[in-house]
Length: 255
Image 1 (cartoon, rainbow, N blue to C red):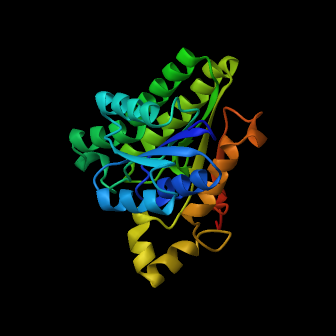
Image 2 (image 1 turned 120 degrees about the vertical axis):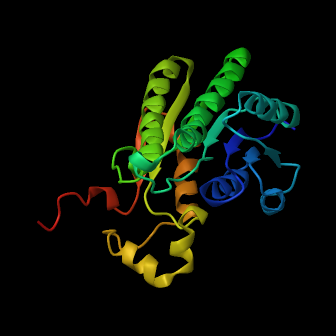
């Protein structure tokens, strides 16, 4: 098969990652995505996105260098060299304050949310350079890369680092025609916000803080990602696009 772009999407078994897999497959891309534990969910995403002729699922811990190498090898064997990369895999904050946080907890989130994108970006770029092709990378960050919350020393540090990784790679890779951008969602109704999805009153309380008046949907983020990967975004690199209903602008209000 030689038709359409080839994409690697991490964290494709649920939430924003799953929405990205479906959107990119619908746009005509061939997609290899990672899942961590839920093989049944991964199979369902493959079936919903066109089947194995266009979409493959690979179990992968993105914090493991060998597993990332195996992921890209599987993608290359199935479809060829990837020209699109979406880093969506990651862990959320636990709300643990610094004084109570074990090093293992901090390390776990940093490895998933920062080491993971470092490893996948590096492997993606090495393959692109070997083939002499360009490409596009989108790293899914968070508004908390610059709007910290108490109890988020692990997550906020990882996402702040990811913002700088994105900007640095954009400078390094622009001459090679590899664009690197970030997407920073606010409150999105995914399994990471399971309580808000299950409890209407709790969700309404949180949504009252969002100027736009509602939480976002994973599909809205995926639409933005698909645009940033498309030829229409050719001149966009080194930026992070916020998608949060203006939540991150609510600073120093009411006093």
